[in-house]
Image (cartoon, rainbow, N blue to C red; front, side):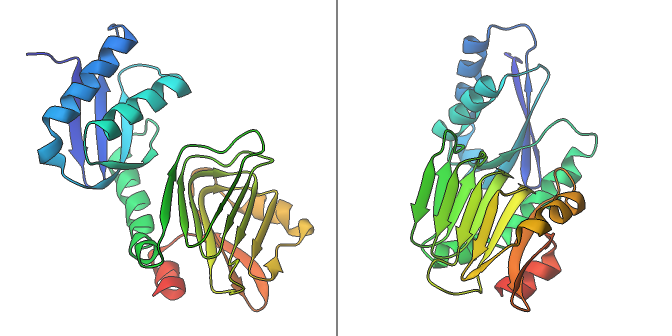
Length: 227
């Protein structure tokens, strides 16, 4: 029995335990085979994933994510780092963002898998879910909502249809510029936002009392803004 790749499933997440000594390309093939063989078991789910057992570069991590996505019907929405409370983090992350997905689908929401870098601009009608980071100098422009399952370090423009009822969400929020409808955040607020945001804590920006506000993502707040 080949134990070079072991999969453990949690609610909302999957931990993939990797052999520490195997050559990476061979290991990536084992990961692809493991998920291909178990595709029916996992079905069509949105999950967070963590890789355990060896250190991975960003490129290796991406190759493993592609190997899983290409050999199963799983939709990987984020990669979780090593944490003793892994199962809790899987559940908290997925519970918060799962509240958003039905709305995205109703609004012709789109998924973009990959990070934006080198000044890239992503513009779309409808809502957009980015599974990756938005680097400084990059922009995301949407007529509706923007959700970044990663770090938002560039610019985000939501509510391009003129409505201020839309929002921007990110796992880590530190935008260069952010605008919702006709409202933009004031430059002087940036340091206050950054000081309040905790690393790894999802944040949501929305319009209230004619100004852009930012708060930690909670089920209660999402219910208020979305439902």
